[in-house]
Amino acid sequence: MPYVLWNAAFNTLFLLGFAILTEWNRRHCYAPRAPRLFDQINTRSLRVFLMANLLTGLINLFIPTMHSSSFVSMCILAVYSLLALIVVPQISVHGPS
Image 1: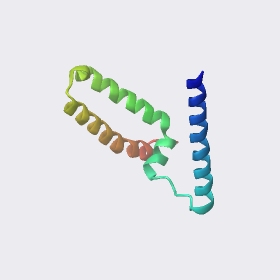
Image 2: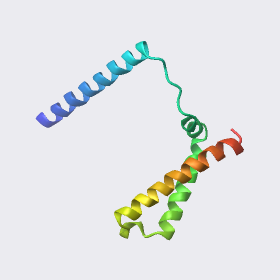
Image 3: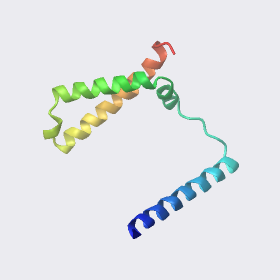
């Protein structure tokens, strides 16, 4: 029971701090505009999700990721992220809403 109470108190305090910071930021700072890539991902979220799933499937088909070294895994993640950064704007420009 003490563990449950400790977690509830800690998480409540964390949420209270987050709410205070959010309210302070709303009153004292300008609301920044989200980066263009975030807007494109939010606009075409289903297509981005499907593209990410297809890319993950291709990687899992051709590369034995369970037996790869850390360096190879990080290279895969870097290429995966780069492809997502390249493809997402193309999906937004060429696809209908």
